[in-house]
Length: 212
Image (tube, rainbow, N blue to C red; front, side, top):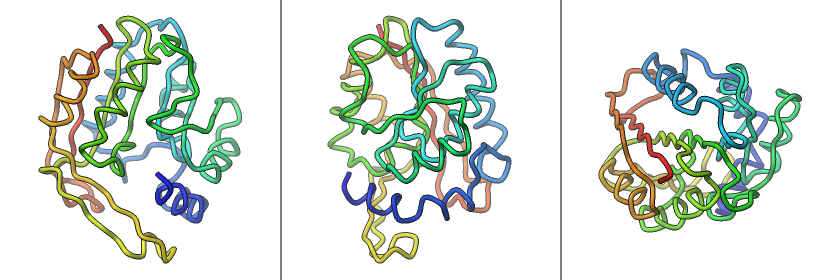
């Protein structure tokens, strides 16, 4: 957590200039955007705000807000939150982390984790999903997107030119699904697509779950 915060605090503005503050065809394929649209349809009129957990510069939050949802972005990086607030002044953003969300029990009407588990070791996914399940209302939906693999890690000694080390994980979809189920969530849909965009080197996975 500390490593991810330090790297993204140091690179927030450059990161936002590189990937943008809105979703785009350069970084999200048609399937990706369609699945986010499906999440919006699943959510309907939620009993509570929708959380974009690990929101970065607010890209997914902006997509959801543009479709009428009341969105709260959450991120561990204060610098990323500053960028997000400047880019999206009509969306609320708060500091928090996967294992310590700034919400009360059963107060969130749905959540998106758009590549926000990529720095979470496989052994710690259970803790993260238990925390997400805690804040979700009954029948609330969750969409998790991540780089798919077999649980292997990719270690960078100089992440984004910061001189700081950062490790990413390519999670096995079956393992992520089991962690969601162990947290009391019902997995009801999965999708895995092959890498198709210039920056991709691994399959991309998406899992829909629901609070029981």
